[in-house]
Amino acid sequence: MNSNSYKGDIKDPSLINEGIQRINWASREMPVLQKIRTRFQSELPLRDIRIAGCLHVTSETANLMITLKAAGADVQLAASNPLSTQDDIAAALSLEYGVPTYAIRGEDNDTYHQHLEKMLDFKPQLTMDDGADLVALLHSKKPSESINVVGGTEETTTGVIRLRALANEGNLRYPIIAVNDANTKHFFDNRYGTGQSTLDGIIRATNILLAGKTLVVSGYGWCGKGLALRGKGMGARVIVTEVSPLRALEAVMDGFQVLPIKEAAPYGDIFVTVTGDINVLDYDSFQLMKSGAILANSGHFDSEINLPILNDISEAKNKLSDFMEEYILADGRQLIVLAEGRLVNLGAAAGHPASVMDMSFANQALSLEYMAREHKKLEPNVYEVPTSIDDEIAKLKLNAMGINIDSLTEEQENYLKSWTLGT
Image (cartoon, rainbow, N blue to C red):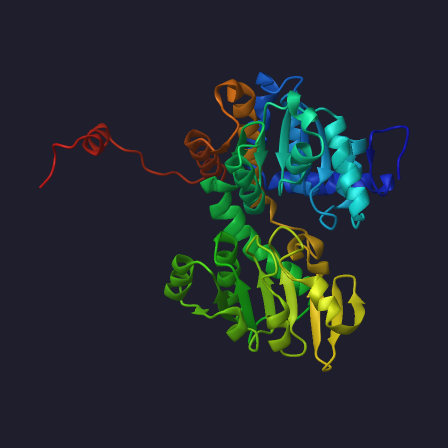
């Protein structure tokens, strides 16, 4: 619903107080972002810069938006996934923190794209994306609107893949930093955050016991590694499916069974896709799955499970709960899909813990500061997060945890720089 008293499109303004409480709670687990916010308040490195964000509207994201406002930026936010919005957070951002937010949990595709259009109407100078939908819209439908954009950031593996494809075609219009590829992002957010939050979503949706179940993990990137490790830790037998020989070998060396999906399909009790690709679970695998198998996705888009095909081969579909749909096949088997095939960790749970998003969003904040300062020196391309930013975030996190580490002596530094010293 809209109101004349604020900008944005949110579900329920009365949720504001609940949203404020949850934002404050998340802030306690985000000390790195707090330290950056304190510096930003005094230096104002983003003064009067318009920033449009297309991100999951969560309590952690709210703390990032508050930090950017502290830096002097004018910010607006839209959802990057129709099922990931937390309506109380959207209300608090719009009404309490002055961040116009266009996001309603469960919004249809038309509303989702209307909200993205609002970000372009804002005429941003910097963009923040989670999946590259905002950048794709900017390049495909309103390329003239990119004139004012000087740079951006991208949060996810899927988005980085799309942006690199755009850059390889020579069509990317401005430089973008791949926040997803920072060590302090994918080592922790993807591995520890996705691993824990995905299982949290599955358990919340189904209340199943993981111990003794066979968990099939499709994709052994950083997200898949974290998911397989935590599934194993909770007593599940884990099978990994992969297309990369190197990652498949790594999974074997980590102690997991590796099979093609067609061989794994008859054994799986729970299937989770974390690949960033399409139709990972498809017709052939559906035909081989046991009745009662649970299908979930923790990649970015809802295309990793081929739901149109599953719908076509099903004779009926029943809604078992808010997060579970049962597809009944012609032979009587039942396949259970969680969170409509969208991100199960956000669709059926609260997403990543704040303590790992602390580092991810610290990367966002510092990368936007860097882009605002250095964009004139950068060609339209996809760039890594500068090592200095990665290192600074790691140091801030260790400091916040009360952990000290060693430093090199002058003698050790000289040794590492020399080629003359040897055996």
